[in-house]
Length: 89
Image 1: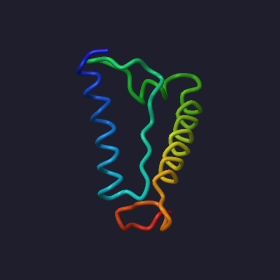
Image 2 (image 1 turned 90 degrees about the horizontal axis):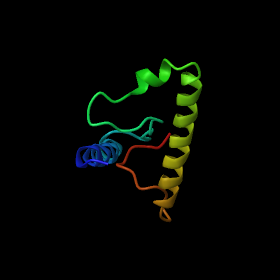
Image 3 (image 1 turned 45 degrees about the horizontal axis):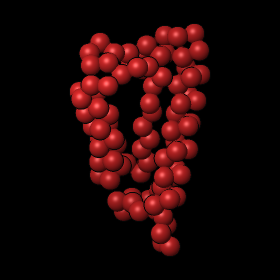
Image 4 (image 1 turned 90 degrees about the vertical axis):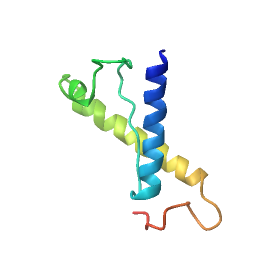
């Protein structure tokens, strides 16, 4: 895997963490079922054009939200999850 692709994955994690800390009550990052490419790669539009694309995307979102919830629970102390002061919904 090229350094550019690894940088892109690292950036996605960083942006997710920054958005969660700055403004969002909950953020989940979805990894699409496509190989990462330096340019011309597939995105969510390509997934939605597949016959089962919407169903696949909804499943990926559910899994990402569940993983993010688990991560929030793991970060919880005796006072509950660490947040930016926003109330969790």
